[in-house]
Image (cartoon, rainbow, N blue to C red; front, top):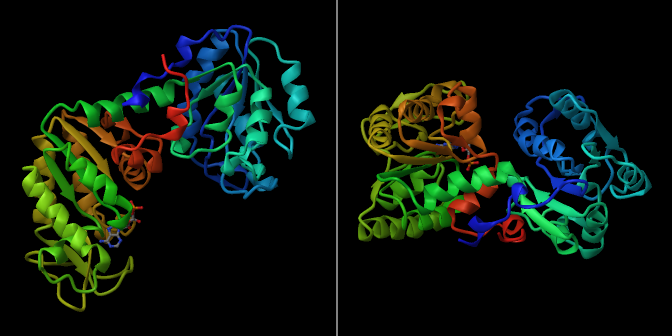
Length: 399
Ligand code: AMP
């Protein structure tokens, strides 16, 4: 895979050079307060390395969706403040509606080695998400070297992730991307077997390519969540009012056949927890088997299924999990997701959690530190599992 041979921050000379670092500072904010700082913490190792090695560090990131306009509530200023505290070094914020305007240029031109400047939200400029050359050049003009450490946006070809690499002297990945590539890359390309992958979440259509690609790699594929009902329908069971994608039933049949042809154990729910309506107050009812009566919808895997899935995890040496097993946001329908998370937490296998909802679930349940790796990128890790090359990584210099 051409993504696995990229220069890292340690492969380039950074002393005295201006290094533009694309971070993922896309943190949740409530009234200007950062409510989850995991992404800031994730960026620290690369920043610290650059400080210790006398670089002039220019940080950039997007935050939310300002849609190409300067929006005060999406300014990165609170991030600069919190980063200063976390690093115990002053992170100067270059307030600038044009991102690379006079303020940013001035702040950068007077930098000394080991100093840090954070520029404004890269998406304040409409060119960013279109990867337009003029803005890529502007960003590059601030620096000599570019380091990408934003795994969460590595699947997007934007000015600050891809375009900029064309106009700097050198580019490399930071420690966070390096870590993601190591864990996700090893799991998918060189897994210790048995290799079990667990997929859940709402829709089959979001995970079509993941299912197809993983069937080439895994020993066991476990499917839960809303997407399981399209598969149960494909097997001829009645699924009541459950979430279903009628136009994906044929595809589900093909995947069931593919699993057989590849001798992959495809595990689907053998019982369910159902309710008459989609509500947190709905009474949970257990079914005896796969079938669901017309007036009900499946909102979680049943107990027998949870045990089946947990047993698959117990016998695995590598587990990759993406997507909840049910509507885990509702307490009555969280059990399947909790049981699977527990099985991973108790396992000695290499356990990798794709970003997004499964990462959130694992952290909320307090199992975060029991996992080998929790990816910081939901969309990016899914595309990785699809076998796609991520443009923000491909664009970096090879070793
Ligand atoms: P995704 O973003 O595709 O990973 O889907 C996550 C969402 O799927 C969560 O918000 C879950 O509540 C939802 N979900 C999981 N299982 C079901 C289900 N059986 N019916 C409806 N929604 C579900």
